[in-house]
Image 1 (cartoon, rainbow, N blue to C red):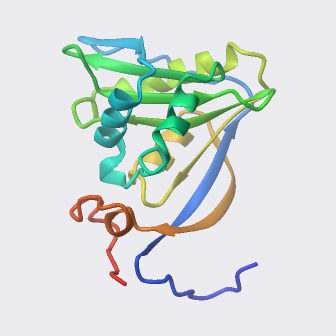
Image 2: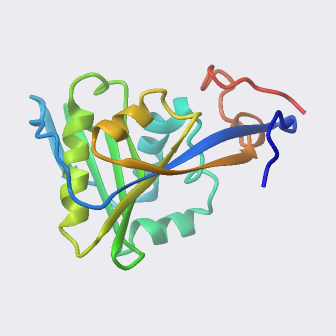
Length: 196
């Protein structure tokens, strides 16, 4: 257990406060699909998935899927317990919804986000309603996710407004992908880079 007070983060690392949230009964916001946007299942191909993953999550330093071996990612994408959806605008995917049903009785919202083309349009609330619908269409008693302080500053509030309840917080320390994985150094300007 960490003692109260300050703790040094090694150079080359990022530190995040991770908040775990859950929903045990479906709660919907009742948002309609914005005009010109279509909900679609995603193709299960690594290349298009990673391109969308980077467009949605790059500004927030999402890196989990980009650093794993492509064969491992392909296995996840093609697993019957993975649900992948997007919102298309003008024929281009502009949102990522990834659901994980691998634990019996539960669904984890692995990834959820929009590209700048959809932010502020109401598409996020609409997509979250669909995520809740898809999750509880299976025999589950718990829909859960985690977000962190290097994600969008709106994420935690959005999840709470969507009906999720915070249940735990943790500290995560990881390699800064702008250093360890050659991500552009101008991503996530709200997270300082401390070079080793």
